Amino acid sequence: MKEKRIMAGRAENMGWKKTVFLSALLCGLAGAVLPQARAEQITGAGSSFAAPLYQSWSAHSAAQTGVQLNYQTIGSGAGQNQVLAGTVDFGASDAPMSHTRLEEGHLLQFPTAIGGIVVTANVPGVPEGGLRLTGPVLAAIYDGSITQWNDPRIAALNPGVTLPDLPVAPLHRADGSGTTYVFTEYLARVSPTWEKQVGRGTSVAWPMGAGARGNDGIAAYVKNTEGSVGYVEYAYAERNHLSTVVLQNRAGEFVVPSVTSFMRAAENATWDQTDMTASLCDADGAGSWPIVTTTYVLVPREENEANHGKAVRTFFRWGLTEGEDASKELDYVPLPVVVRDAVLERLK
Image (tube, rainbow, N blue to C red; front, top):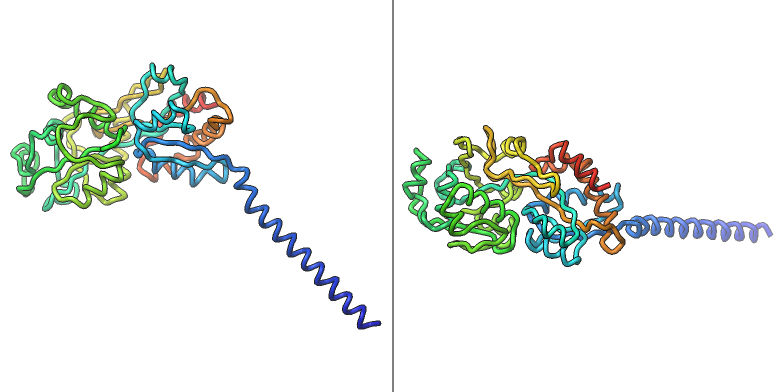
């Protein structure tokens, strides 16, 4: 009888342990599944300039906001088209959308960060950061007037630097790009010839040169091709350890690209309160980097379940407040406080 009681006790104990184990397992599975079930996924597309920033915001904010971002780096022009077509929840563009298109598409536009476009060149024998150019000379490189790196116009800006007798290989974006919009806007401002013959836009009829897709495509090409020169967002140059060109600004100073020189350009900007835009290109002020841009987001004005309007606004409210450290780590410049506060008011 005693033996039967012991056996029964063991069986009961084993049954209890099995129940506890199964309960723990089910709780663990529920814990693993429920956060994913609660998370709301939003989809954005566009600017490669802004991609590192939005991806960082997504990685840092998901646990707090319950919003997960799927971001497609397809270029600013395509990003604008996608949000107009309603195939994504938001579009991202470094080129601001016109007021007319905003009204036609019933879209709200707002800035998220400021950053610099830098010129990067792979010139054998020239030390990193050792090449100086002016705006007109850079335009002459891109319009085909300057074809060799030892051209007298480049040599005059770089006394003491041994420039090779090597063809210049200018590179441009092959996709519709806000980075291209800013770069060509700069060339148009500093070169009447460029303004007349080429102009500015997210995509232009380039007089010469090869094309590559995205900031990462330009960076990879320049890094691996001697004689090449291209334009990328500053974070891509830093991440790929590219040599950047020192450019002359509007004040006549030769300036090294940096967060500080981007901030100098932003300090004197005038913002359009209707469309929340500002031109920071070829800005006045000592120490200003001449090719600086604001990157923008485009969202439907009407919030609904189909466009995940509430979740999109939650994501960007987090980014504009809690995400400032991530912005600085990636060498973006946060919006001026007065501009940020105006954006947050619109996102309520």
